[in-house]
Image 1 (cartoon, rainbow, N blue to C red):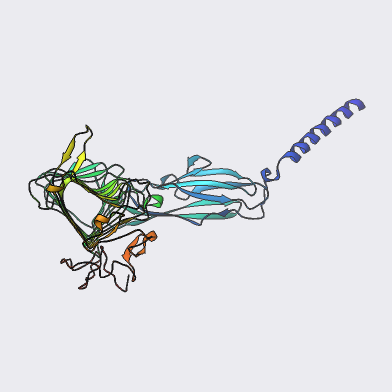
Image 2 (image 1 turned 180 degrees about the vertical axis):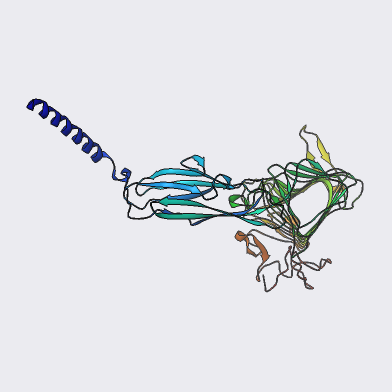
Length: 469
């Protein structure tokens, strides 16, 4: 009988010894402290999403939950206050849900929570606030992280041929999902303050006529549908505005066109020299291919800024009639690897089948800045110089070609030679010491891109220097 009791005691001692051994081998940071000395900490107390269009999902935002204790803790409950009806989505440890129980966070470690939001339409013109919170419960203690978004209803257009003589207004944004066409003999007007946002790979095609009428205080915005986070200044998010053959008399005034592949793509050959497109007081930026890309067309642009484009700031090929006056074209700084000049004009182009398309090139470039981070940012290529005409005067050009060092043009190579205010902050007005000051010629453009009056000795570029620069 004693032997049996001794055997049972020995077995119990062995089990206790094994359990103690296992416990001793468990790292301290994995041992759950049932009464931790410190509360959990967070990477932020608020997750904020910029204005989002209804029905369009947000980017994913991250929340880190830190355990400052040496040992692991168990969070009994993590939930969205709005529950299953919340517009927000939450992912904990890779699992989607609105409520999670007994979530373990190891000592001196963190938990990653991902948050997204999709906002339902509210039939409102003005942006509206969408709130919720993520709640954390530890015993009797509760902590919460605020979730805040602004929602914006919009007019959604998906593969639409517009009716003739339409007008878009500033009350509610327009979202082009795939494509919109302004048909032949039809007219689309965009009033000041109108906002047009393009979905991924969306396009605006113009066979008829478009008239964009912003003003210096209330520009017309044409950009990508995603304006939050890293997408705010990302190029290539939509295709572009395409002016098709037969389209003429288009006006773009006081607009900002950004984040696409091509800002304006013009291919409208005709038998006259009247402008197919007039661009004024306009900014085109962050284009993965080109700002203005035109073929055998007629373009007049003044008081306009184009910057940060992948291939061309301006590329006008196969001849045409082009006039650029008081413009600033710069690829400094630039987000792209480039091998060719940013601004190019040519009377010909080689097609995919190796045939050559050519026509007369007539170019007027006056009081403009062409700059970038390459030695030669300006190129003119003529197959038949006898049929073309060039008037290139009073410009600042980044070039090594002596042929452009005439007609009061200024060529240079020094860093920031034009004297931009702050190019690395994309501020391309000129500073007080800029070589562009008073170096232009009077040609009748009395105001600059901001609406400031030019003096009797106008400055080169889109901006007239002012003390308020």
